[in-house]
Image (cartoon, rainbow, N blue to C red):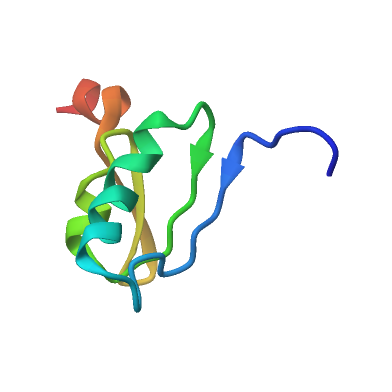
Length: 73
């Protein structure tokens, strides 16, 4: 706990906050040097992430976004 971690795990970060704070939260992950594992039902918040996405879908995990997904297209 004394060293910085390269992982942020927000759980429903946009619940019960003002619209202005939601906008700030949407831009924050891009400024982080590590990984973000976000749990959110907020589609707008999730779409603000520009890197690879892993999304649970019908009993499996769907990958989208990022260079690896573009290479498969």
